[in-house]
Amino acid sequence: MSESDDARPDAAHLHVRRGSATPEEIAAVIAVVSESLAQEASTAVADEPTVSAWRISARGVGNDLRRDVPWGRWAG
Image (cartoon, rainbow, N blue to C red; front, side, top):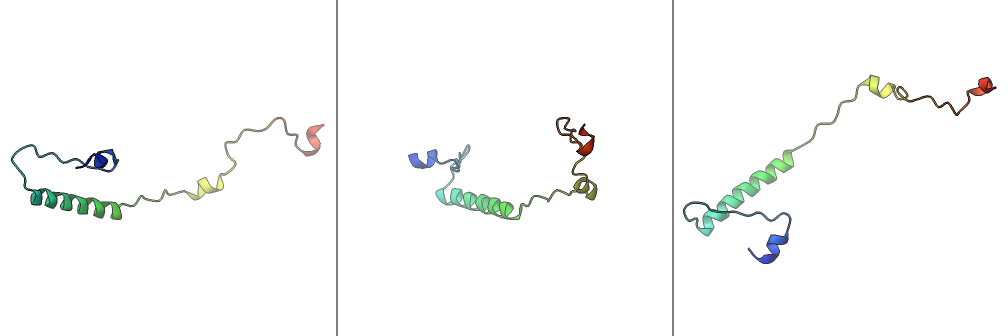
């Protein structure tokens, strides 16, 4: 890896802890893992939140009354 690869946020590091892997074996591992991640990312879909008809129709419930705004003729 070059110095510029370490600065990239998407750069991955692979450490062989036991044995000695050949460059071909490391390339095979990277290819399999990359393909698996790409496939998972392409099929990952977030569910749309379900909104009930009651929540849609209850648009004004819960708002405080404004005491500074008079109501029509009863304002005095």
